[in-house]
Amino acid sequence: MATLTAEQLDDLQSFLKDWLRHAGRTQADLRRALRASSIRMPVLLEELARIHGRDGLIGLAERLCEIESLWQGEEDLADDDESPLPLALEDSLGQLDLLLREIRLDT
Image (cartoon, rainbow, N blue to C red; front, side, top):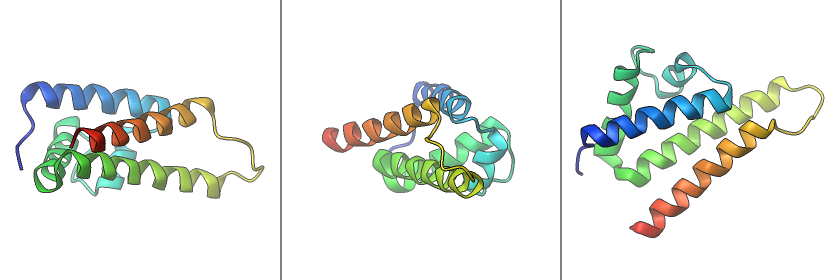
């Protein structure tokens, strides 16, 4: 598989920061989900680049969707009152699904 370019890594970093903010999550949450050794962004990007190198862009997008599902499941367990998802979380889930669908159509 091809490695991510510097520009792609910058785009991925911007995406991650926006995604984490909209999902109400932190780099520490992402570190736990990835089982990375540090919460530092370069370490997180390195782990995601490793996933991309092994599984390609589709694999990377699928892994991010799995993390989103994991987080949603954690929130569902913690949520006692069955209230609907916050709008920002719904938007981030929709964006990840659209991204995965677009990637699949490109391949």
